[in-house]
Image (cartoon, rainbow, N blue to C red; front, side, top):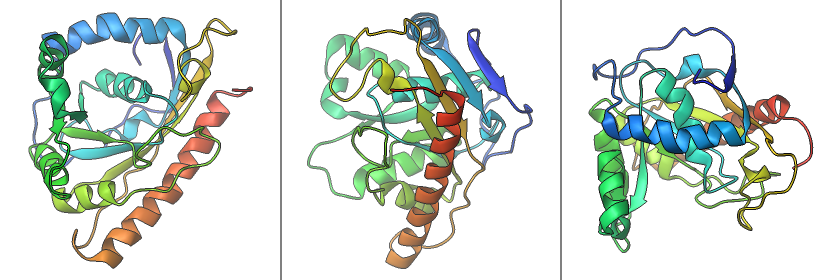
Length: 240
């Protein structure tokens, strides 16, 4: 794992759905790791398990529970160790801001437009994954307390079915110890524990416009996410 990140388990690796380059990291991601990544690793005592489920090559959708606005950082760090980057949704208006837009484009994030048709952003993310990239999404749709999962939205299942890709459930516990929904704080401990648990891929089977298929995959994802969150909590025990 990256410096400052402890890992458990073997470093095997399942293959993805297409042959993307072995090393996706470029100058933008190198800078991001050296700045944001270094701050994150210095600010938390991070433990990771199950990272072998992140495919070395090919497309997949990483779906993580949402306990903090900084969650994606801790999903991305183990992926970078496997020479993969994660492409997540970002608001299209953020792409229009000079500095932020340049960074989002450089990091390969996926714009989502307010007021766009319900299927448009899902199809855009599915197209990215079909090209062999990893996509990232928080199925709850908004930041929660983490004590219980919020209702799982159907978007992730539809993306996976559109792309014909596996979904990898990712449990997170600990980002909310520094940056909960209420906002950033600096209470003790100085370096809180944080756990990240990657689960086995869930194969997507069915029609993205057939409600029973979508609901079945959504239910499987919800159950898998709960299991991985419990594992993550075990990696980072203690009060929040």
